[in-house]
Length: 264
Image 1 (cartoon, rainbow, N blue to C red):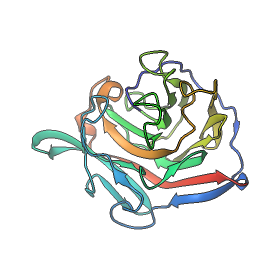
Image 2 (cartoon, rainbow, N blue to C red):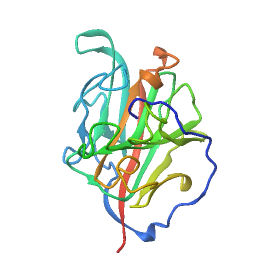
Image 3 (cartoon, rainbow, N blue to C red):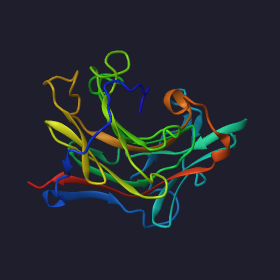
């Protein structure tokens, strides 16, 4: 999600069905069958105003108006409201598993229903637990799902590293047409091994990033990463066509998050 520029990218066609879950062992899940703030033993927060990409929102911490669990879902709510001393501000939430649930290889599944409208930029993505190979993009980024409201039927999937990033070749990935993004839950999944990363939408494999060389420049994906779920507002990509203030509040709902490891 950092500094979005579509580089090596194309419309995706289905490649194959995902691996059967019988090949995998469930190692962690959050089904959100509770009420209140997200489980503090697992979920932390990004915090502050415009922390990346020149985005417009203030990410709040432990504020139920922006991030809450209820009715069996995690709800990340973007609002236009006075906040942090600004009469005309946007607030939203970004929850992370940094320091609590970090993973090296495996399958990550997130079932989600997306917000809509011009200026909205929700994402399901992963960053390295530490900058093992240097700051972004050298240590990598895995974008399992990104969506921008001005392009309402496309899901974007991307990889960032030292070779594929804004200042060089652009990110490497695809866009994929999906219907009913806002009225229906869709399953976004990633399967990560030492040789490749496969991406799935509703159990259809839509993109594979294969290990091109045995060095961090193209494959920094040999270290633990953590999960991020957020709704950004505006910014370099999400705000390319401005922000429609009439759409707020907007909410991304997450039915569940599940992480698997390969059976040995």
